Length: 341
Image (cartoon, rainbow, N blue to C red; front, side):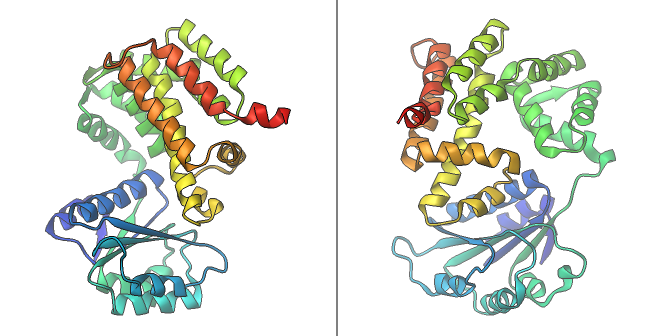
């Protein structure tokens, strides 16, 4: 069964298919489609999860072995197969066809891959996945449809924008859905639910350019505590909302937890970064941070960001800016100690 991403929710409501193949080059829409499948699987008792990263020289026999291995912890599970390219090769094609013909009843296979070219869309392995399960082809949002997408996205989050605010965000993001989603999230954090006009949207956009909350997060990620504290002091002095600053650092910590988890599970960090669409220019920063903080430390740091959020909202005592400073120093962490050693 071949569907577009907007039809996935209705299909999941009717029941889980044994296989989902999600392909496309829009990271946000691919991620949301995979999240929807995972959530539906969890709701139906698929509590165990195994992730296979398909990279050069991948042993495709691992897929068959994973399917044939009895679960140790539950009777239902999800196997995620993350393909770095949309070309599985001869061995991969044969294994995917064979799996489709004998898909286990207790397992959901969730495959993600970049966009298929016209020839690949009619390949034997794709037809086999289509026959046994669901193939979701994620297409880019056309430029003329971008304002409608932004408007729907904002309203789904409780924002009520006027036409000028929608056009401003659509034009600023230039068709980049991740950038548009980021602007909407910043608006929601800064303004809360309710009406948004062009002036409010422009103020939020200008704030993001003038007060670079991402420089703060990047300094902590790079292990430069002194610079992180300088940027944090500047952001506070310029009146930037603490919730925006915390959002920026928590965003990096969530990514770090995902990558540390993949690495701890025996996966390739390079493949995990590719799956999370980490830009090449940022990968050295991530690697440096992972040398300082393994999975347990990354989880604890993310929990501290959650405590900052509660403090900002008045549900915990303390000064949120002091907590942000302490979090930044902890995130920058042992790099200074390592350099001194």
